[in-house]
Structures are given as C-alpha cells and as structure tokens.
Length: 395
Ligand code: PLP
Image (cartoon, helix red, strand yellow):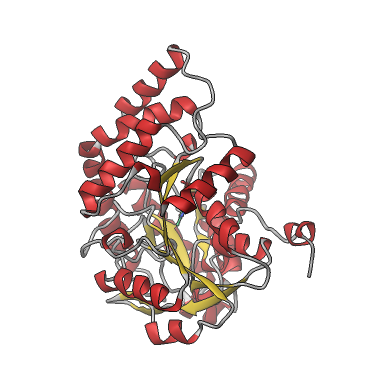
C-alpha cells in the first residue's frame, strides 16, 4: 500500500482555479476584460444583519476559542431550523458546525474510508469527493449520469446497485447537483436512503445548494429514516453568500458527532468564533435569500435562452444550483479538441471563462462545459455572445 505522503503528492488542488489563472493572463496580454462563468459562489454580499452581528461580536471581544463542535446556540438553532423544515425532531447533539462544508465532507470521509474501501460517486461530481477518497487510499467507483436535453440528468438505480461490492463503504449524493445543475427527482433521496440501509452503507448527502431550486420540489435525506447511516452536509456559503466565512455543518447521529468533536479538537480546534455569531443571524434573512433565488432563476432563464441559440450545443435548463452544463460533444468532434482545450480556446478567443467538464470526474463530463450563472444578466448575455463568436471561429 502506498503511504499517505505518496497519495498526497497526487492531489491536484482546485483545478477550476487554473482557468481563472489563464483568464488573468489573457487580460494582461490582450488587454480585454474577461467574463467569468467559472465562479462557484453567489455574487451578492452577505446579508447586512449577518455582517452586523459578526462585527458586534468582534467589538465585544468575542474572539476566543468556542467549543469544538461550534457554539451551542448555533447548533441548537440549526437543529431547530431543520426540525421545522423537515418535520423530524433533530437535536443539538446531532449537529456539528465546521469550517465550511468542505471540511465537513473531509471529516466524513476520514471517519469512514479505509484503504481499499470503495465509494460510489455520480459521474460527474464535485471534484473534491474523488480527491479525498483517493487521498485516504479508497477507490472511487463511478455511476454515470445519463443526459437528456429535456429531462436533464438521471441515475440508473439498477446500475448503481450493481456497483455495490463487499468493499463498498459509502454512497455520495449531492442534490441539487454540482456540476450539472440538476435537482434530482423526489424519489431519489428515499431510494438512496433505503439502499444504504439495506446494504449497510453510509450515505453521505451534500445538500449545500438546497435553496437553489428552480423547478420541481426538493426532498432532503432528513425527510427519510436517516439516523442509522446517513451523514448530512450543508453550510452557509451558498445560501447566505458566505463563502469566505468558512462555516458548514454536519448532521448525523450522536456517536458520529462525538467523533467529529474529537477530530475537530485535534485539527482546527473550533470554527471561527465571531463568524458563528454572524451565522446565528442568518436564520432571520430568508427574505433576502428568497429574493436572491428569484434573481438567480431569472439569470438561469437568460443563460438558457442565450445558450440555446449556439450551434452544436445541447443544453438542459438547469433546475437547481447555479450551473448550466451544456453538452458540447458535437463541437469537440468537429474541432478534434477535448473539453479542456475548448475551454482554453474560449478564454483566449472570446475572453470567457467556462470550466471543462473533465475536471468533474470521471468520464461523462468530458463532453460538457460548466457555466455558472451567478453574475448579472448583461454579463451573461455578453459572455454567451462572445462564446458564440469564439465557437464560430473554431468550427
Ligand atoms: N459541496 C459542493 C457540491 C460544492 O459545490 C461546494 C463548493 O463549491 C462545497 C461543497 C463547499 O462548500 P463550502 O464553501 O461550505 O466549503
């Protein structure tokens, strides 16, 4: 078995950042302003109430360590909020606040994945899942999503079940889904919880985009019988435009949360004190969240109708998150490029940053580009029209 330092050397870091770097070069050398469809965060400021609470906490000297699992008040507030939202009685002891959802995900993998263990991931999926599984000596096992322009992305449950082996430890579910922008159908959460229970697997459910839903309802795994084997992940980054605050949370049964506490006290001690005070106010800002979602829905509509007019592109009108994931396979075929080369060309020729689907493992993404619509409508229109010009030059 390769040692830990060996697998560490294969970690690639955030490859989406590479394309921002190329864009900076283009801006420098060509003197043009690029349009960035690569961003993975809302472009709005954190609601004022939250900022004020954090400032107040700082001014009052609330700057010392907090408990490893986060402030009691914040854990209680999260538990209360989820109880209200999903109807299940969730307790403070079942909640841990973490420095971002990414840390929460990392800890979940760390607690369960041993060398040689298999983890089932959707293909494509958020790049960091596979990276961490590999780092821990585990093996990602991919279930490809199929694509249909009208109904979006779907998973074949029989195929997923056929990938379960005696070495399978975990299934990772992310809804709404990065990078496809899919809000999966209501049944999927239930089916996955059932399969996980039947096969004695952990279901890791990353619901960080749960407010970014434009079509269809949203069903959380917390609406199912989750306690035995579900680890639920969420955070403040996307819903409240708080990416830089680094606050996420885990919901799981008490014993798991206790382990998170032990890991936390050895790794980062606690989440940032005054940021947690700010987050306490976030539950009073849902009017702003709703306005943001309405705005994002309009942006989604604009981006969709603009993309529809591009030749060689098949696109689903995304139903969740803030990404559009067009299929560009026809363009790749005509030009002989892969999605990475195409993304670079679109930056160089059009000054527009997109993320090649290839960075979202494993195979399916190779035919796609990911575009974020977390920017204003004028920029969306201009960006897609610049993309159109760049593509016309190429094809
Ligand atoms: N999970 C998914 C699917 C994401 O897309 C992201 C951020 O891009 C995260 C988790 C990380 O969130 P956080 O900022 O809370 O670490």
